Image (cartoon, rainbow, N blue to C red):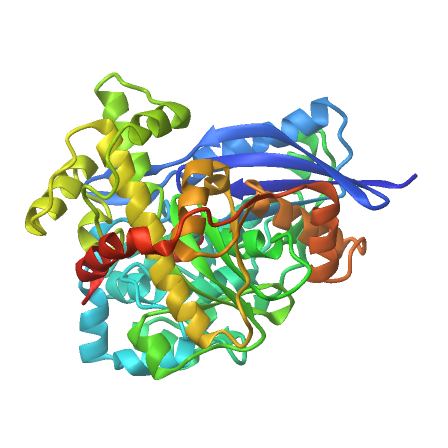
Length: 493
Ligand SMILES: C[C@H](O)[C@H](O)[C@@H](O)C(=O)CO
């Protein structure tokens, strides 16, 4: 029986993992073979990604496959969006990639709209939500600052493409990740030359766009030998992690919304065409690229980043809480004591997250959290209400009825939050797979190998291999009404 084995690298803002997916006939098995930490590093006031750390961790996973004689059919890499590395004409990486949480782009969109192109024009051209760290604004500000790596750069490679370049020596520009940049036209699916010009960079800075399933190249000879896995092809999968996750939503129809829950909460719907309107502009929704030419119409919500930062702070105070312990502490606390707007600018990259949450509560005349449990409850309840607010708009614009919410990614393992969300949105929550991003990565490789034909067959595959958990509403929304009104007052512009 023919067996195909794919190696999926899913690298997020706080951690990365290598997952081996083995396909035989109509089943697949997956095994995480390596997990490693990731994070931004500060240097002289600037924040970077340590791309060489990530490269070394990728090599460790390849060496493991070589040592264990795992015969790989191909490799695929997905990561977070918007960030990129700069390559010189001689192929050398000129600097560590800047990190989107670096504050050098704060206030830059406003400057760009004044000096180069209006906000409405930028939105109409890309359909992408305005966020200061979008690649368009990073490039424009680098140009303004005469950032030496950009001055020397011949190519810019988004992070998944940069890692594929380090493995193969070939440069590509994969569509789904490029779509997060605010540089791509969602109708032509090509880079917008006028936007590149407005940012002050040449159109040759980016390679021609390729689509998920494209072969980037094979591992370099030195890597093939060093790792012992041989010259394995590297596939450009849905390079934007959220695109890989959405590809793996275990569904057989389109009447759903999804929530990809991790450091960020990405909440949206899958459509055939972009939704670019006065309303989507006012609500700042985005039209990122998906597989099979689809659009991911969604909104970024600052997700578990709030809790991840608090956990780091408690850890520095000597208290390394597990998620189970945090949930237990949270359940002891009274509900809706304090709420925050997760997307408030003060939470982007504060010195201290607990202080930022307390300050937000003080500024909005609310009780400040005083215990670990109260901080966790504040975060979970604020996220649940954020999801209800976003879903309300999605229901208004979706060209189909939304019957359920699929929660995928690490957040799908949070039963307390899944049940609270089902109660607050008054719809069933279908939770899992928690490794949806790696699954989507592997399935796009399987499609490139001709094992599956489209996203619907991919999703049937998942449904036959993984059984998601279902949370149905158990409480009337009535009991949340007052708290939700308070939340809406905190998020109104
Ligand atoms: C900047 C964020 O990384 C991006 O908007 C988000 O979509 C993402 O990539 C989450 O991993």
